[in-house]
Image (cartoon, rainbow, N blue to C red; front, top):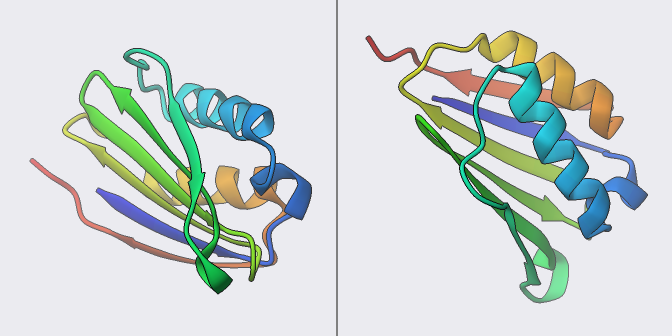
Length: 110
């Protein structure tokens, strides 16, 4: 399981559902996870916490994302029983989203 917090992301990526969908596909390909069904992408919230949230089921669990438009932040959770490299996932997300800073928390399941 990995929890990625990304700050000062490129606004036009996190505010456009088509770009979010492309990001989901690219991330799943990068960490070698097989997507199951279509991603769900919805915009909701209020005030400073308004933005898109996304859910992509993968064969071994799910990837969830929350995008905060007020602060241009992205919060990504990757849950999987299959191994993936959390630091590589963070580097990919940071580059793709143009984030200036990030935090990573993870633990490995055996």
